Length: 248
Image (cartoon, rainbow, N blue to C red; front, side):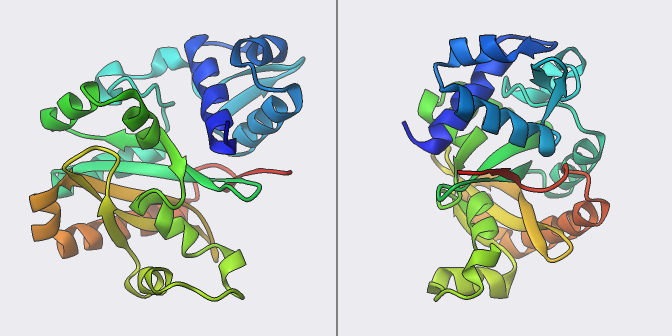
C-alpha cells in the first residue's frame, strides 16, 4: 500500500463513521493502518483545517457533516467551507464547467493533492459521469499523486524543492504559463489547473474540468477565470494553515 493509499483509507474510514467526533483507537482499528501513520495523517488534517480534534483523542471532519449539502457533493462527502463555496461557485458559473479546489498533501517523497471543495452547477453530465465511474476513478478525483493531473502538476511545478533542481520542460512551461491542461481522472473530461499561493509558497490548486471539446475551445478564457479566482483565494488564505505535511 502506497503512502497516498493510506491517506485516502484513513479519510475514507473517518467519512464512513458519519458526523461527529470519533476516538483515535476506533479509526486505527477500522482503517487497518498503523497507529503512528494514522496519527500523522490526522494531525496533518487538523493543521490544514480539513479535520477537527478534541481531547482526549477524538477526530472528525471539519464542519459537521450534517451541515453538508448532498446535492452539491456528488457523494464526495466534502466538508463545507464558506470561502471555497463562494469562489468555486463563482468560477463554475463564469465558466459553466466544474470548478474544484485542492490542498497539497506533502507526505515524505510521495506528495499528493486532496480535493477540498467543488461546484458543478447544472452539469448533470458530470454527476452522471462520476456516478457511473469506476471506484478507482472516483478515488483519483478525490485524492491522487501530484503527477497525476493538472491539479497536482501546478503544485509540483512550484514546490521549493524544485528551485535548485533541474526542471523538465513541462515544469518550466507550467511556471511560465501559470496553468496547465491535462486529462482528468474521468474519461473524456479534461482538467485545467492553476496554483494557490500563501505568500511565495504554493499550498494548493484550483481546477476547471470540462468535456474535451469545450476545454480545448475555451482554454484561454477558462485559464483567465481560474487565475483570477485563485488570486482571490490566495489573498484570503482561507484554505487552512497551509499544505498538509507529514513527517517521515
